[in-house]
Length: 317
Image (cartoon, rainbow, N blue to C red):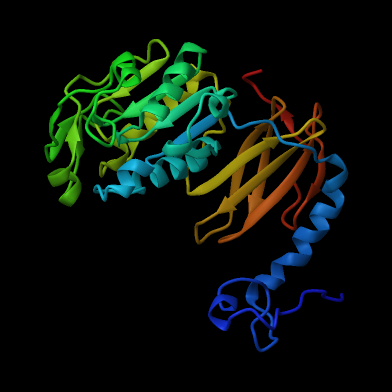
């Protein structure tokens, strides 16, 4: 096979060391080994692929909080995204709090706002409009106001701003059967919790968990909360455990499945495609793509791996 990629002679060497498929001296990087398999896959898949349907879940990146140098940064956001992908087979669209708008949230079934601490008025207005349009919104942790400490009109309407109190090392929770959540180090010293109780059930369109639950040591309470939110919002899931992330992208003619195994052992990931159960095998430290036909879940193309058994009708259907 002939390769057409060339090194740009004007590309600085310090940049070329981290991007592209070739090193400045003309030798190939290890990443080049995976290109033929994925190129062959997309050659087969291309006739079936159109624009994908919008993701039903949106996660809001707390950029105001991050720019203010608050503890935790994007740690909570990253943890939520990973758990959604690994436990539920759901990968959200990530939107900056600073660029949030009602238009960008119009197709979402569920909006996750993990511990923003502060919210700009434009973001609060977008969330308020989303709840009024029927979208479910889940906010965690204390919200102090906007980045200037003001309680804006939209924040007042949302009803999520209060003084709260300092975060304790151990905080009670009703999620996941853990009983308590543990917060350590700077998180416990620098952060606050909202003053209200955790919701016993997710009612209405706006849900506020007063604890920064995604930053606690324990995992299962967060999994329980996310699972409940996805279920009430009507978002299809593909539950699993074991560190294998998955997602489905829906196109008019086909469904593209991506499975990523970040463990040291080969694994099988169970998915529900068009009401049928499918198991996709993927090697250790590897990723796999599979394209399914809409309506039948027949495999149209896949990257190398063990054969995929014909899908079987899901019992839940």
